[in-house]
Image (cartoon, rainbow, N blue to C red; front, side, top):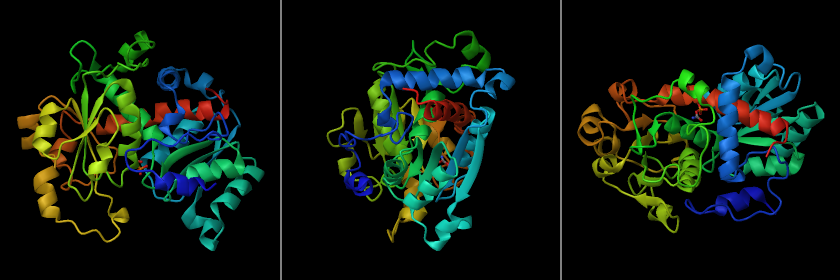
Length: 358
Ligand code: CP
């Protein structure tokens, strides 16, 4: 069996075929589908507990445990937040990047993983440009592996931090995500078991979340498409045909396509903007002026069509392309909150990985 081939054969919208063996290790997080809804709640709850725990106590949880960060692709947010999260729990980390390691000399992913295991790594955080690489690494090493983004496939911790961000602004009574309504830390501390950290199949019922732009190449879009509808949300995909094939919405309940951005905005409580992934376009030519005219999130567009929607973006943002600087820095933007939420979510995911939690 070739996990990479299995993963890349999937269509954009089809959930992974059941794999009886994966994940081999109970601590692994290869896909957001590795978590049951109760498992998602456990991660959210633990993220909040760890975020507000006394740092000295927190630092003993994984004291001297060894975690390898194996990055074949560039990263700012994911790499830094995994490292800070591991260190906040007391773990030792080592970073192996493809540009400064024997990967440059041709060492395979399997041999690199086995080498890290032989050096004492107890878990591996992997970012890789090939879809399915995390499955291959886990099968080769049987270590807990956390998928920190594999090609155009999945980015499960991004979907979890996006969910935490949405829930922090979510008002269950009005079923809206209000930018000005933030469950501030003090509020979360006072009710850490409340709606911000416990989810069910109807938590986001009646809520529409729009994902806009380069859906085809986006592992963030795919992980969110696999997570948010399980919590009752309607996911509206928006983009040109070249970056959003029709089949993206086929057969998946809760996922629809709306190519008119203004119409999509009018229906949405939260909007997740995506950059065009130039590194994955493979020769595809786009008219960027036309793209901006149709899909750029501008202050005027937001004011007219979605004046109270939450604006999100996984980053990196390209100011002036998919989003204007005014919107990115504006009062509806939760972009930097998403970054901050990454540390808490990744603490919970790393703890789960190294303690083989459910
Ligand atoms: N969102 C995200 O994965 O960002 P980085 O590529 O900077 O890690």
